[in-house]
Structure formats: structure tokens, C-alpha cells
Length: 336
Image 1 (cartoon, rainbow, N blue to C red):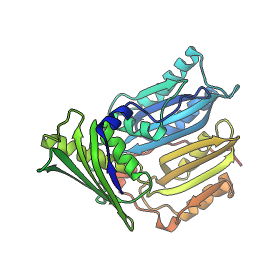
Image 2 (image 1 turned 120 degrees about the horizontal axis):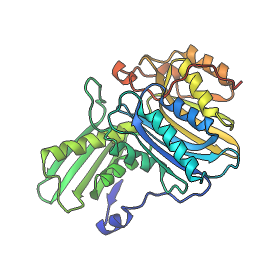
Image 3 (image 1 turned 45 degrees about the horizontal axis):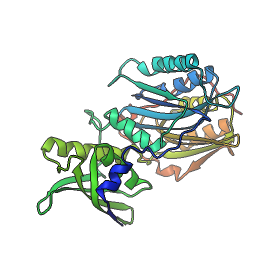
């Protein structure tokens, strides 16, 4: 596949988030340091405040966490509009996100008329929270290779990327280049078996190519982070159940009690049915024991929770990566 872009067309799209306003729910954006207990505490607060989660997505990467969650007033099923109530929600969530240790001050944004394309917004939030900064003692993927070179015969910078192929790979890289304020003039994407190769000719919006080694390194780090954020080598669990207040809080309790850690999650509710997807690892960084998954399915319901992919191929993660958790809780669920 090849990409040819007219710069003026790209400029006209730069301010677009790709979403449509909605008055049916209230959108909550959260960014903070990933730690044990974070997601369960967030859902506990929302449940106590009688806020029903209808849609949402959570990403974790490099010890950061970002979430976009759509909620409604449980009593009315509509967006929350009372300023005092919105202020209370924000304050309580802020207390949760503060934690004991934080790379940066957590951010919370609440809007009753969200205009966000969720996954594009998650990229922007993670980028703003500087998840591309490499932490000491954390093992980084050797399967992603990014090269940034000068184009001698033309005033461009050439960016080449080789990585494992997966859905939405181009979306992730192009969103990141755009958010870094680069314009893509030409591009090529090739997939062969399970590997993908991308090449882009870029300039900064000021018309200049990459001009320093520090800028070159930042482009490399940011593109690597963009690809890693959505990398889903974890075990995928899919839940389909009648929706109710507190469902997600109960589910995450069961996962935590059985030693699982959520790396990503996507929640959706349609017609009173919740369909949620979780990408999980073992909290210790070891391969997930199939017996644990069987136990969890017994607690939640065999027909409610399905395992996607081959459990025996569950990857082993370095212990440094196992430090980055999203949720925890300490008491039993009452779902059955």
C-alpha cells in the first residue's frame, strides 16, 4: 500500500478528533501512574456515586495508565449535568489517582458532550503523559525497529518502521506522527507473513526535516511507544453479560483475587448487554496457569467469560513489566 498526501488536506484535518458530540453520556478522561488497585478504586468510586459505565477503554504502558470512560446517571440513564455532582466525581477520582508515587500530576477531564475518537484520544493522552520516556530496568521490545534518516536528494526525513503486523498499526503510527506535528508527504506499507514494514517521508509543520540527534531520538522513542501501547500479546478474555451497576468492579475483583493483571480493557454496552474485553497477564510475570482461568470462569460463569486464543501460548513477561498493574481488590464477587 502507498500513501500520497497533499499537505493542505492534512492541515485541514489536524484539529479533528474524529468523534461526534454526544449528550447521552458523560465522558471522563483519566491519566495517572499505573499501580495496584487503580482501576478497581476508580470503578468503586463510580459505583458508589451511582454512575453506570456504558463504554470505555483503558491502556497501560511504561507504568502509565490512561482511560476514556463514558458514564451515565444510573437513575436516569442520561448524561450527568449537575455541576456540583461533576465536581464531586472529579475530586474523588483525583484522590484515587494521586496514589503514593507518581511520575506526573494525574489529569482528570469530565465533559457532558464528549467529542473524542476514543483510541485517538488515548494516544494523545499517553503522549502528553510522556509514556515514551524509557524507564530504567524495564525491558523493551526487540521486535520493533525504527530508523530515522535524512533524505539527501530531497528536503525530507525518512522514517522506516519494522514490527509485528497487527490491526490498526498504521492508525497508531500516523496518529503519533500527526500529534508530534509532522506532515507525511509520501508513505509505503508492506506486510509479509506476520511482519509489517512502513516507510514515511515527513517534515515538521514548519517545513523543516528532523534537524538534530535529540529530535531524531524522540521520534524513534515516540513511534516505538505508539506501537507498544496497543500490542496485545496478553491473554484475551471476553465477557458478555447483562449490564448492571457495579459489574466492572465485581469482575476486576475476581481477576485480582486470582492473580491476574489487566494490561488493556475495552468496555461496551448495547441494549442492556455488556460486552467487555480484557487483555491480562499473571501479576507475577509468569505464564498464566490454565487452572486459574478455569476457576475464574467458574466464579463468573462459563458462558459469560470466554477465552480468546490459545491459553497454552500465554507469554512470559519480565518481572519489571509485572510491576505495572492496573487494578486490584480484596473481597469476593457476588455475580453468580
